[in-house]
Length: 223
Ligand code: GTP
Ligand code: MG
Image (cartoon, rainbow, N blue to C red):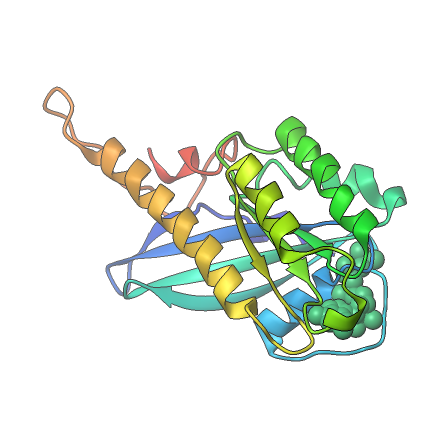
């Protein structure tokens, strides 16, 4: 089980290196068995297992990536898709900067449920959370129940980016997480610029990595 200690402020200055560090928290949601855990393992460890061990509650992994020459610590929070864990997993929506909505292209029900997952986000996540829809298991074209066009259409309807992925064959997994991370970082940078623009003679400072309020993910970056 993950602890709250890992949820420090999203942008802070590394005092030894005198450079900005970013921490981005991404939640992965969707029906059970669509491949959420497998996507996280493929992205963080470059491993894949065909054995299905359904997630209990919530878990996370970290991978540090580089964007525009800046180090970004990506925390990937993997939620259980099973209904009985809904209360605990929903509690993690609020601190998420990005959410991956995953369905299985060989399971139409999991695609239909994406609308319900989006409703959940609207109810429980921060209003400016970045979202992306992933149609996973695209290596199983022979068992496909959801066309790529249907996935794209749903994404367009909601103004969300979309990709088909395969955790098994490692298709688009890097691309998906990097795209979401890049969009989140761009949003963080825009907010940082807006907040540090001089207002009435007094500039604002970046937060140090201590004693930050945790109300909204981006507000904590600014003192
Ligand atoms: P919950 O934890 O119950 O919510 O499920 P989950 O979404 O985490 O699913 P998980 O990653 O455990 O994967 C479910 C099953 O699908 C496992 O047997 C995986 O090996 C398999 N699987 C996951 N991704 C892929 C994929 O891209 N292609 C194929 N063919 N199988 C996959
Ligand atoms: Mg899982």
